[in-house]
Length: 509
Image (cartoon, rainbow, N blue to C red; front, side, top):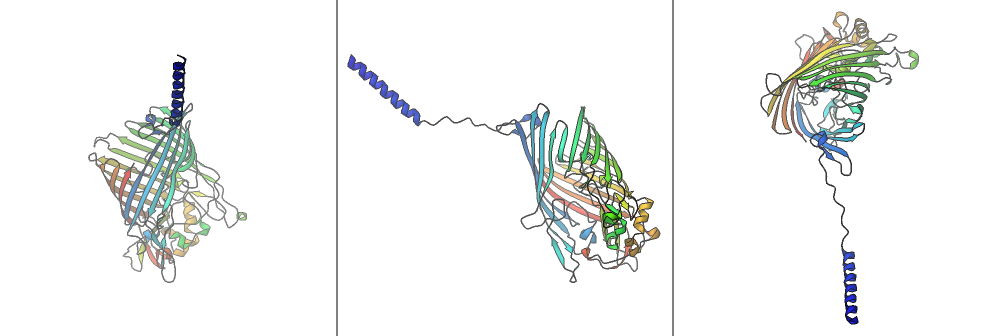
């Protein structure tokens, strides 16, 4: 019996030893994998960042396009070599662009904390510009960022940061669309960038904003935003005016002082099922530099300008499902960029044909400013007003067409006209007396048709006609303009027109 018991205990000990050795050889149990979870509280496309309570959404688009009848993308031939209309200007320009945006949101006891980033990467075919050399050589333009007309570096291209902001407890801090803008910014129904008639900061402006939400689609905002990049056109000192500058739409030396005050912007909006109504206001400080070359020459006092805008969108109109009408109108005094939005031209120099005996060609030029002053005078604020709008009709779920247009006026007061017209450049050109009037109107009319054969893939064709209605009369005895290969001769002063076609393919994701 004692022998049997010893055998049983020995066998049990051996089994325990074997099982322990086998357990030591087994792998440790892996931690559970945390899979990406859908975050439905902020809409489609959001996911939780693994290990956090923050939701993220990635988006963007890829675009390929070509513009015909202009030297750039999105604009008509209204200045530079495009306005010169000779062999230096491209007959067409092409661009490829990729956009990436990152949207993150986190629920907190103070509400949602949001960050948003949007950047573009693009390559644009280059353009040419005259060098003014004795041989008439031209230089290929390869420099430029996404807002510029060329960035044709081989295998390089350009990059631009459009938006980078934080939103928290009603505050927006960083680079975002201005609160002054209508929700459609520069595009009531178009792809064309050059519409005037309202504010537009589609590539974002640095700001500090508080927005109050009153419910039922009613919101209001107050904002301090950077004035230098998008809020100012020109402050001209006519003492520095030259004939060559006048021919490009510059009626004096650009004479900005430093940035001393942000633009103050206010907005009230009603956004409901029937459509939208918005009223916007902006105040802009015009801070000039000096009368002469240094601070001992003195300076004009600051003058605050302002802008007011009304915008209206009407949905569910009888013409068809999804059809819309977008309209806006603006008035500015000393704050012209709120009419001539950030991507619109503010100087015009357009050449054309003529039947006037003794004239080589015709020429229309014009310039936009916030204010004008001369040696020892105070600033004279420039007045502008205008409107833009579009009607979009959906033919079916795959096709739609928009008819769009804009019209804007620039008006200089009597004192400003005297400073401009009696300055050295105008006198040298022979544009004097009743023939000298720097006021002008600029208008655009266009039509765009879009085809969306599958979701998020759209092909479009956009035709835009722009007319410069300038108020100068007679002729100009002009010096040579080397940059556009124009000779020193006599030009008839005349209204000008330009037409362009923009073809685009875009895939959103």
